[in-house]
Image: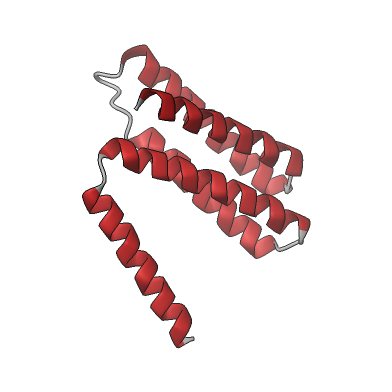
Length: 125
């Protein structure tokens, strides 16, 4: 128990350090990476019938996607921001449905979509 809380505290410090020292573009990359990791974890958890883990991973990934949507600059972002807003909305809705249905095929498609968005972001940052 003590070891787990110590590891948790260390992880929190690591996140705080990264968020205070990284550029906003790097933070978005980290969010995409985390979302992709969570989607892969959810696939494995679904295979193992780890319902709690699956629900936690997909919920966390959905929070990240909604967070990315929330930081879009809709006033100055133009058509790109509008398209990304729609994309993030569609991904979060599809993830919500895939989670409710424990749909492995949809989870894989959503992983691919997030990976492609991450790759696109990496090219423009």
